[in-house]
Image (cartoon, rainbow, N blue to C red; front, top):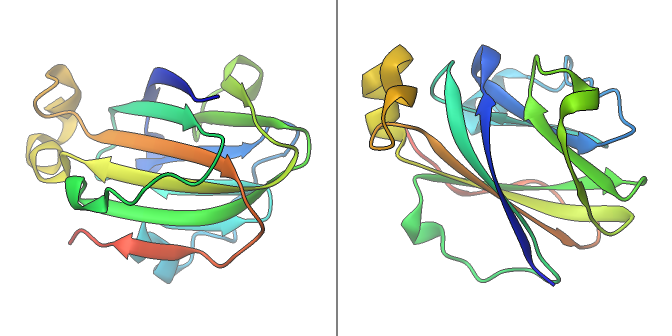
Amino acid sequence: MTTTTELTLFADYFQIHISDADSDGDLSEAWTDQAVADHLAVAQDALGIGTVVNVNVSVTVVVLPQEPTDDSSEFDHVVEASLDVSSGRLMVLGCTDYAPDAATFEVASGWNRVRASRSNLARAAQADVDSDESPETTEKIRIQVWAAPESPATITKRWS
């Protein structure tokens, strides 16, 4: 069964986090120069998704029963990584949000694949701190999650 949830998250420090709900979400060592360039920081039980703005972003979380088809042509930047969600509860939040108040989603316990597809990046970057004042300029992030064996992170489409 597919479930879809719409969120608005504050992308403080130009990032949002996805993690096992029982994780401490520590990505401090994961934000290497390459991770910043890829807009993707990876730890075993936490991911950081880089944003082009430091304000609210629109996030759609889609929990899927299997891998979705590739629709990367519809987005500006697409990355994927494996995430160990041993608790079976995935948490999605802004990096400075209070974890107990974060949105959580039931997913398969163990390894899951997360695809982050981002759009409207040029308009959001141009509007900068005012980008979240209008849907036309708000950065949009779609997070898709499905059960899958662990595999290396990939950059399917790069925005520059």
